[in-house]
Image (cartoon, rainbow, N blue to C red; front, side, top):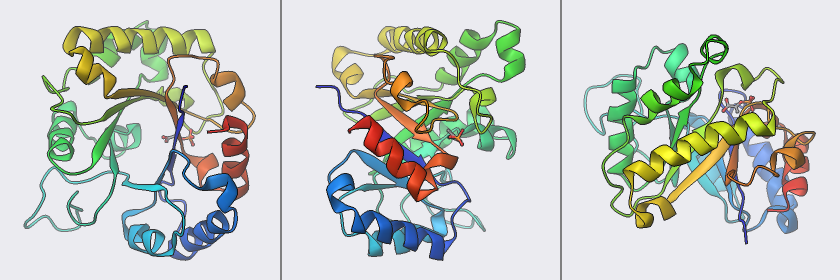
Length: 245
Ligand code: PEP
């Protein structure tokens, strides 16, 4: 049976006290959230508190990490600084706001692959690139940093068109299917069946309770990376209800 994963990227929306109150609400709704394939991505500074307050079994991840794991890197966070399940890398906000190049993202990806956490590599085209029919070549370039083999690690590729993030502008299912098919073909050309089995495809960009059911009919989608709607407990709960994870 298809098992959908829900990854909640809280970005910088929730401070420590808001993160803890979100977790208390999850705990109070055990029947709905327990043992669901949900990964919460709090701010780095709130991960400890989230872990300490969570009474149910959900996964926890980092929104980003340093390419180094230890040393004189003021203000940065090592993937090994706390035990986590997953780490986002290459999010468009990192690429655009923090000017992270493919080369930086490649170093970070390799660091995550060498750690105990599994990476979620975000890729996606801007509106300009889409309008210039460059989407597939942009995705190919962003995928060119993938390692030759995965050595048994789980990898997730999150297709997140930049123009869909935070805009309320969700692509049609046909468009998402076309992009995910292209990603899948690229992965098939790179990896063995065993590695392919360990790769998931997510969609992200303005996902909420009003569009999740429609998006679920794209069969190539294994999960969703959700931003703003995941940081609001009632909206998040509505999504979880509708997915019936
Ligand atoms: C994201 O930034 O990963 C994202 C999907 O954001 P939103 O859901 O707010 O569009």
